Length: 253
Image (cartoon, rainbow, N blue to C red):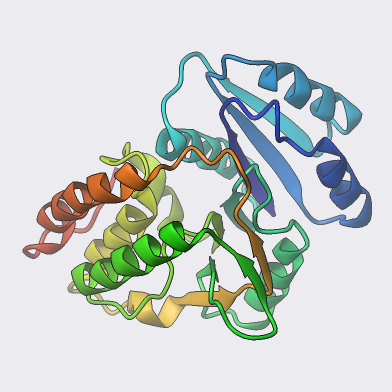
């Protein structure tokens, strides 16, 4: 399994110790860190981490800031060159703890029909989901709209913890640049929906599994601001128009 970690100006909040500890305790996970044109010392921190375990840590440097969507896409395509069984991406701030990767791994191993495992931030008693009220309510409003646009009862598309089973379709989901910078998670699902229209392949609702997280912390310093939720409305319209408004040929490179 290879996990892509997109990084942009993470010097002040990057937890190298947690990654080192995880690598020491887990044998089946490698990392690709994508330095997305950072302007601080993120590159130095990531290079130091790579040197500690060069066999399992790779560093991909982008010459300029491309945004999270492109950083993830470049990282996934790079990871796929190693032909892993699973590939995914995780937020660098570790709002979702690294230990959840193993939970996803076991889930995908146990249920071969599941192709995508997504973290879901469900605020239930007995779980520690710490999120600012404004981000929580804006997130719930946008999640409802996303579900309507996709015509899929998905709860949380925007959690930065996702792992994919590598299939013949995986590369095609990431081959083309995304239209959106922050709503690309929705675009991935829309591409999957489009690619399976008119086929006998399992429907997206049958291959995506939302994993309710026990712990998620809203780490200070997020690059997403309240105004980005408003911009996402335009993104959703573009996604619907491009992938979902009428039948189109399957997405291919």
